[in-house]
Length: 165
Image: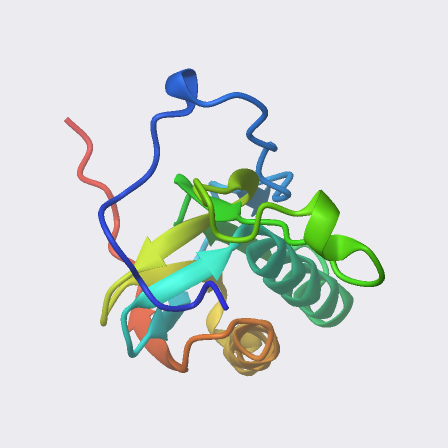
């Protein structure tokens, strides 16, 4: 229901009342500085919106699998933040609903959650690990991708080292 991008961005929370916080709890997980050789990323193929609950489910799935298989030899980064506020026009159903509900009169909707907008080629999450754990990272990313509504692919690339100045 909220997968397609419709209309302009609706992100200014200071003008809205009662916007729920994103469900995602942590954006970085694992050891940030390590001997990482490979970065495995989840990349979306189509434009759309990913709800914060789906991002959290993908994060939990990837973290559980990679921590079980690779121990502490990984670093996960969620690369999206759910800024887009989702609204819903609640309509009463059942007996006597026509007297209670206003139907579509002034149907702006109340905030019910948040989502992140994506375009083709957007990285959703990345796992950095050693070359020995590359297969485990790919499987963790594959499992995480099944939690998202948008079709995705796995991108494997070497880790670029930072230049020290």
